Length: 312
Image 1: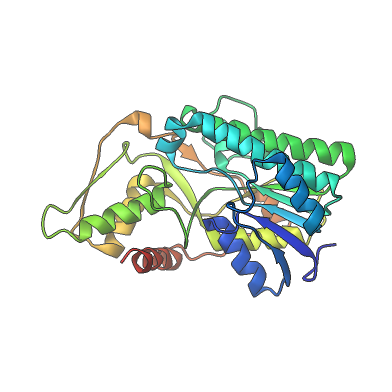
Image 2: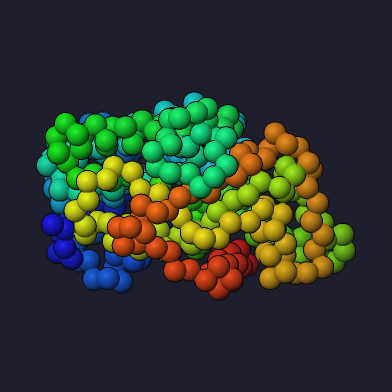
């Protein structure tokens, strides 16, 4: 059983999700959190990861480390996304098993699910249809990790879990306009436009019509800590929220919070829309005692303020 004196290796602690998990674990009193910068440990290197586990001897592993990016990055660098993620997750899962790690939690993304599922997506619908082409390589890598964990659980009776969150946002996000996810991209573009004296126009990709579910990153960190402490024979659990709107609606909400005089225009390129809808069914998480509590307006305000404070 994992407790607050257990040694927990948190891979990817500098990213948006990893830093939120680190923040929540410290807040809840966990005393032995192991972290390492990627400059000191390349998680793609099998030998280095093997030596690291032998020395540190963690009781639990949280895999928040991954190569991630927005729709354009996934389209431009598919080989990097599949290769890096396969190497990272395989090294961490295999070394966790070889070192008798009690608990492992891996994070993925809702893009693992088929592109043409319009209803809230259940965990059992994985691998039941074609993937969205724009992030296929990343999705295939994450599906491989889920299958690997499922296989280890079945063959070796391990207690490893994959948590699949919807679109995340919050402090410490990436605001690279070519590689970020849609909410940080909207915040940055609208904030930049708001600084102009005239022609406050924001040009956005796609039609603005696709629907997206979003969740504040601290909520996912809370889910991580919650399932870390529980013995569940579940390989895959969706982590989502009740907040779902079109890209256009999100853009307008952010605009109204930053500068109502900004004019938003979409380029209407349907190829950049991605899937039409990506809503997760979170019944399984709810049945196991977890549900999101976020007030979307309040946490969006916090995220916008975080961006402004870090990009003065």
